Length: 136
Image (cartoon, rainbow, N blue to C red; front, side, top):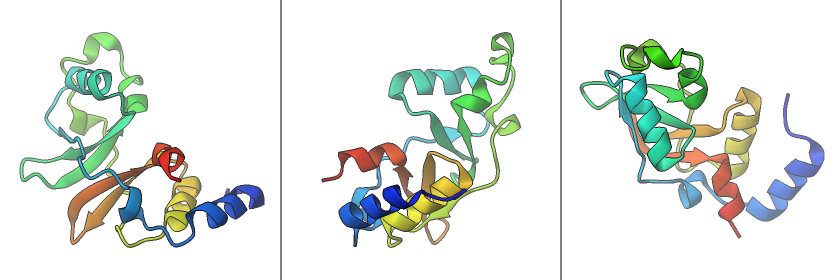
């Protein structure tokens, strides 16, 4: 798919030289893979983020889950279905040193709204498209 030329030009002008580390969120809220979808709903209601990294018992990243995954399940089943049953295990990641422009291109190509920021297999932040509107 890719970015259109006007958007790419705007990004280059406004965000040239900025890295993911410059604007990523470092206080990342995660959810345990054994949590219920009801608990995910509570997290979404409290923090208003549309998706969350999922951690396992060892506190390692196991996947990601979003409100889209939640609402694909009947409401009456939210208390019995675990996050690990609905999460995506396909992780799309960047590092804090990657350019913001490359990160946005990756998000556009993958059609996703957030990237996990990883350093040596450790989650150090999250990069959301919404963060771009707060820059400059």
